[in-house]
Length: 83
Image (cartoon, rainbow, N blue to C red; front, side, top):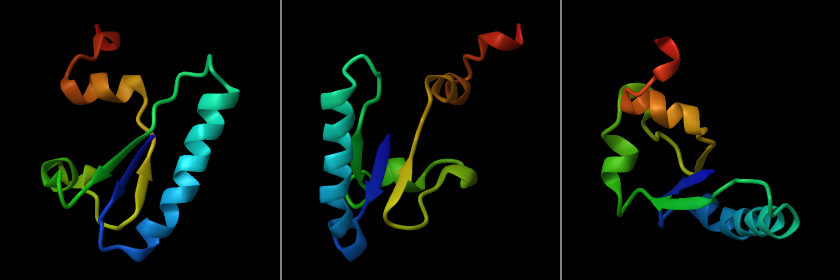
């Protein structure tokens, strides 16, 4: 689960404590559940937020996206299921 934010965004600043609470809840109560939490500053990591294909650009802050392992394989061109 990735939260994309900008430091100047008031809504992003308000979301921080909620995002951390959700992350702690999942990590503390469901240890076998494999979910990783990330926060990406689009001011610092502009390439991750703005240089992707048009469908994947971050246009609003905050944005939260869930990426499944299969999505990463498809984006990298390693789709073995099509063989």
